[in-house]
Amino acid sequence: MTCPIDKHNAELLVAYAAGRLDARSAAALELHLADCPACRSLAADQAAVWKALDAWEAPAVSPGFNRRLYNRIDSELRLSWWERLARPFRPMPLRQALSLTACAALLLVAGFVLQHPGRIVPVEPRAQTVRAEQVEKTLEDLELLRQFGSANSAESAHSDAM
Image 1 (cartoon, rainbow, N blue to C red):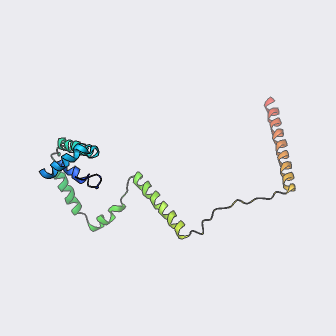
Image 2: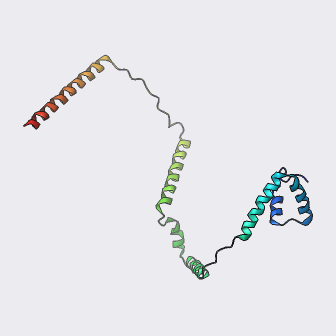
Image 3: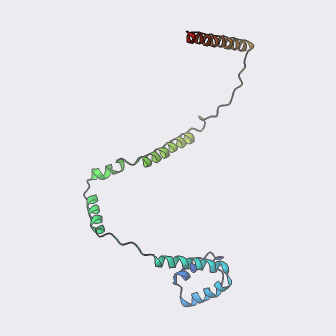
């Protein structure tokens, strides 16, 4: 027998683990499983899954489930066409609204970028030329501010002393 994993036919191993193979195919696969550790491992894993599914029991349905279900279906059928049309626009939780808003904004930006690729151009830094007069004027202004700051601190110290 050719290896089911090599042939991309793992469904054969799943059917074997579920017990859905006929006796002849199951016997041939069991001979292969004795020689192939990869198939043996996959078949064992699938058997464990099927065993867990067989052991699982669904929780019991609450006593009023059917009544509530049919009442809800009836109430949905009794809605007017206007209420059905307005339903998508009802208030939604903030978390959903934020995610929808973010997605819409992202789509708008992407559409703008794709529609007008030439308009968004990276700004290239320009070298500014500084003249000596500008530097001298700036230094004089800084010196004036420094003198003004020292005069204010001297006045505040003199007013605190009084």
